[in-house]
Length: 405
Image 1 (tube, rainbow, N blue to C red):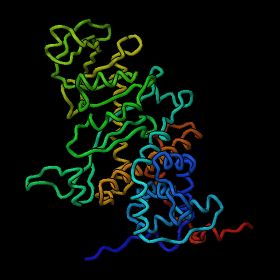
Image 2: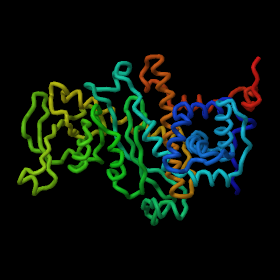
Image 3: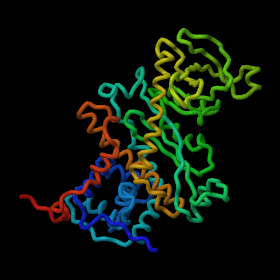
Image 4: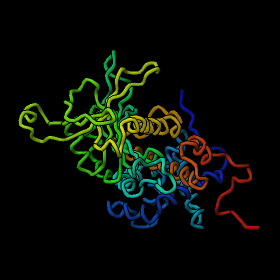
């Protein structure tokens, strides 16, 4: 049975136009044009679908995951025209939209993310976003399905299954987030079977002094640790409870100092030695938990960072799991796959997806800051609905036809 094309409804809503202006407020047209110029893909002359609109369009795709391409185009282009007091542009065909996306590619959106997606929390206003003066951030990876096209399968690969391979290829992504605001500070995408650390490595440039970075066991290892501490950030990572760490010095709070080496040979010569602090703890009275948990940290002073506080603090790492839930479940409304049928299209759509998520987090942060609330007390889903909310029928007019009383 043929699939019925989804639409936004009869007449564009006022709130739909406001989405385009919000995106333009978070990512100014001047900055978007700068990134397009840097990559040599900006429009040379005014067209029906200029490159700057393509960029905003890629973000809006995830805000309207079931709507037709042409309807999303209308929201973006007419919304930007309304914001700037210009005439609305005529509609264009799906093939023109595809050609515009192909010309722009993914690099400008990735560069925009690197420039514009900065940490949001202010220590004087959101002290819960910090510990001992360090901004709380977390890293993690996740996988998501992409359309079952030959090019996507070749680029990203299939997960295995009992019958050979899964129905859809999957891409593998890694993110760096600010825990308190869920703002994604960096993101990268790779093939399904690519090592999680290899996907994350390009994001090390987003880490630095003044951060306390938390990670789960998937990032453990001497080389990973060594590369992460080279950024100047402090680390609090979980490791396997059976990994061997000799007690070099017992500390007053029950933790102890130990050392890491790149390999057994280096251990014998003490070459490349890195001092770490080991914190072990249990969660008594809680079902379905391990007997013992172990954390490694670069915070070596138990007076500045007591073991019990760090064990409690590590719970903040789970905010990155909430970010993936926001991306996969709430932002794209459980759509099984992204839309793009080519690897470059998938990458472009991925970065647009992340940029849209950051815009929602930015909106939430503005509201939370105004009311002096923690961001987590606000609903991510509620703010998406706020952006998508249907207005009364009287609001279904073209911006170019608006008049003042």
